[in-house]
Each structure stands twice: as structure tokens, then as C-alpha cells.
Image (tube, rainbow, N blue to C red; front, side, top):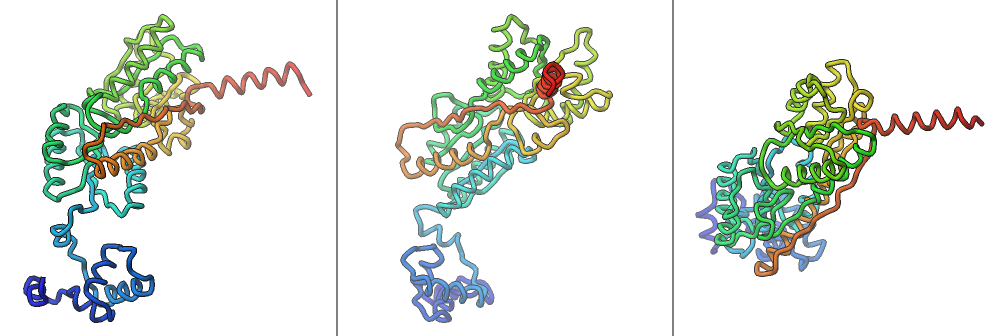
Length: 360
């Protein structure tokens, strides 16, 4: 672009690249290298150019630069429910890895709507993102991955997948995590265990229920006491009352996620009951609040931030090698025992008994 063209295409009082170069006493190409964070520019020169940019109030026209570049150094990140703290941790993990590579993520909340998901994907395609990290909404059809391939838009599925064999995926072993939690409750003596939450059909729900069913049947117990409700705090509050009113109420509520568990504990409190004393309550995810709730929540740690990091690394590899073999990263789940399941109370009771039996 010539200087004349540049001035004709800029808005009123808009500072040009040439003016920045003149002010800093460097060439126009040097300013361009600084804007692209090139390592070819000496530190003192970079500082001088950045000072000129700040002093003149120059705004980098990244859209115009995109037209001249093969990559935009932007990616899309589509999550299902941004109000859930779990997705905040996931986003932080994605941002940590992408930030180190100078890549920016555009965050979109699909709110579990396939229609919103399609609109956001189309919009991100229009913005020429280099790829997307997608937490698929419930109801996402497997042919979506084929469509993204036709668009030549690299995609990594995170937390959920629409195809077990097709495409890249980063997640956690939900099935084993729920099986491990169920085993923990059975070993504490519970035989009537309710599964609370998870009203939508997707891979993560299926895996959780499979783990619950496997452990219950292993001990000859029924896995049929399931309350399907949204994975929210409000739904947990509403769900526990009808369970307690059953002729044979459960002695443990194994919840789909931590949000439901927090709601269940609030519902118990409204009835004058307490989790870990009157009924065992467990969650899934181990969000930061879990350790500070009262009582502290027994849960399964799924390492949301690490999943985000792995998803970002997968996407960067896929962008660099579009034709490579699909990769799947499955992180292990970890049982975190706290007060809400009653295990801590049992330990304290055993300690008191031992102290009385063997006084110092």
C-alpha cells in the first residue's frame, strides 16, 4: 500500500504506520515487525517504537493485517454454560497455553443450544479463526465434525464428544470417576444411593451414569434411583425434597456435578438436616467452592484447567498438522474425600474410640 492509499483509506485523524515510523526514527517495516512481535527487532528499538505508538495513539488495524497473513493467531472457544465455575477454570487453562504462543481465544457461550452453536461457529469462520475448541451442546449431530472439515477449520472437542472415534478430544475419565465415587459410598455402608442431576443426553452424562450403574450392580444394588434435573444449584434444592419424602428414602445423594450438590445441601439445610450427618452428599468436578462449602464437599476432581491446557495444545498441533492422525487425551479422575459424605465424621468417631480405649 502506498502512502497515498494509506491516507485515503484511514478515518479522520487516524494515525498511520508511516507516521509512527517517522516519529520513532525507524523504517515502516520495523514498526510492522514490532506489531507482529517479531524477535528480529532489537530491544531498544522495540521500546522506541512502542513508546511512539503510545504517544501518538496508534491503533493497529489487525483486520487489514489478517488479509495479508495465512494465519490470524485467533481461535474460537465455545462452552456450554459460562455461569458454571468449571468452565471458567477450563477457559483459564486454554488461555494460559494460547497466550504463550501469542494466540487469542474468542469465547462464546452456547447455552446448550445447537442453534446458537451453529451461529457462533459460522461467525468464527467468517472471522477466519485458525481453529476452534468446542464443548458440544447436547443434541449436536456427528456430521458437525464433517462440516468443520469441509470448512478446513481445525477442531478439538473438549469435555464431551459427538463421536468416540472421529476427531481430536480432550477430557477426563468420567465413567471411572463416578464408579470410584459410588464405590466409596458403598464402602461407607450405603445401599440406597440416588443419582441426582444430568437431564441432557451427551457423552459426559452417559459416562457418569455408566460408572454409577457398574459399581451399584457389582454389589447387587439397584441403580434405578435416578433424578433427572438440570445441573444447577436450583435444581439440586428442588430435587432433594421429593427424595426425602419417599417411603424408603436414599441415605446418599450422588450428584452429577458440584453445583447440584451445593443445591442439595441447601435443600437439606432448609429441612433442618445436614449433609454428612443425616445423609451423604457428593459432587463431581471439584470447583474451588467445594473445599470451602459447609460442610466441605466430597467430590471427584476432573482438573478443568488441565483439560483446557491439553485442549489448547491439541488444537495448536492440529493447526500445525491438519492431516495428522486424531488424538485423544483422557485425564484421570481423582476422589477427594471431605466432610459431606460422612467419612470424616466416621474417622473422628474412630479416633475418639481409640483414644478412650488406649488413653495416654
